[in-house]
Image 1 (cartoon, one colour):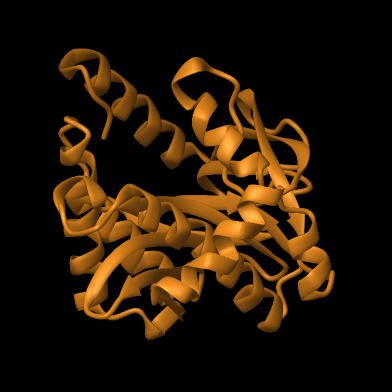
Image 2 (spheres, rainbow, N blue to C red):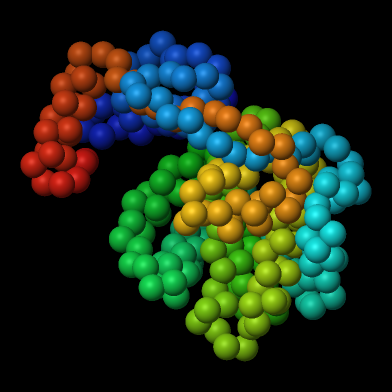
Length: 255
């Protein structure tokens, strides 16, 4: 289980990942992928899990034939991977990633409006030792970024972005090789630092994410169901939460 907290106007805002039971502490508690339903209106969250306790060849053997080919092809194309965890992640790393992430969404014709929120979250999680940032590149050219949430035993894919749409010198095929290779290298990296499970960060069945889920399934993970929910404990957190909800209804958003 991972707990990362901050204060907003003196009220604890608590992210709790992979909880087995409700927390006995005051605050606005956001349960992420809990083992069972906790809090108000919990929602099912479907994902895939890969076992990192297996040896490297066994991990690779679960991949589809085409996936294994692309993983093996990537280093022959010059793809190199790197990883940073926790306080190794610098402010410049965060700024560079969020700029890259914004350009990734822009290349798909989507405006990304949460850059500052993302930066604040990455700073918070990195300071807590609960964030990892990995890259795949050729020479000086960054091709793919992945970010992860880390607890004691698990690693959870959080964000993934590639930049091929804005760089004509990089083919979609090479970026595809690099992305698959980065996932494989990430799995080996986390295995070697003692993590036991790789959570693919969602495997939805809706049409808009169907292709992403198929990509993830090509790595052979096992289906799993968790729950996301929220619980507000304590008098002051309840007042804060009620006021935030009122502001959200009046302005169309939520603090």
